[in-house]
Amino acid sequence: AHGAHAPSSFWCYVESIILFILLPLVIVNFHINFLIMIILTVISLGVISVYAPAATKKKPIPVRLIKRKKYYAIIVSLTLFIITLIIKEPFAQFIQLGIIIEAITLLPIFFIKEDLK
Image 1 (spheres, one colour):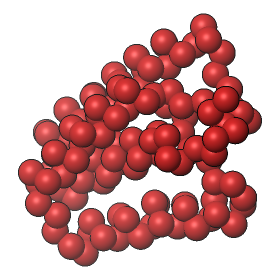
Image 2 (image 1 turned 90 degrees about the vertical axis):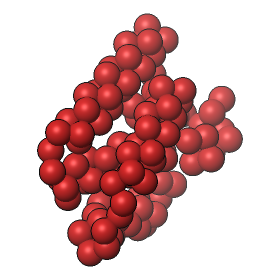
Image 3 (image 1 turned 90 degrees about the horizontal axis):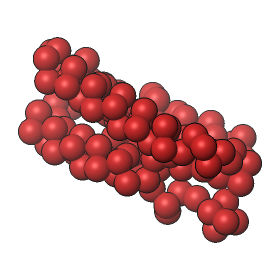
Image 4 (image 1 turned 180 degrees about the vertical axis):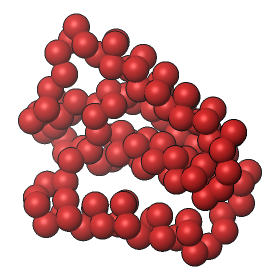
């Protein structure tokens, strides 16, 4: 679904450590209510359906691919969400966290103004 990119290598490392190490550790060490995760994931599915795919100046998306990438992002996210309703925690929560992180990186607040032109 594309998404935000860090402005420098340093911030890429910081972002990656937070998203892929610290947040999963939070899920492992603190029980997050199943219903809260479901609600956040459903909201994230809405964000993905509105903002995906998100192009940047450095990674533009050809017009002919935008619709296909949007459908693909929605279908993959929805399929993963359905899987989380079947499998057990914490694996379900890890997948839900992935969907939530993806949705967050699609939000316009993470794009520099020149990237949106």
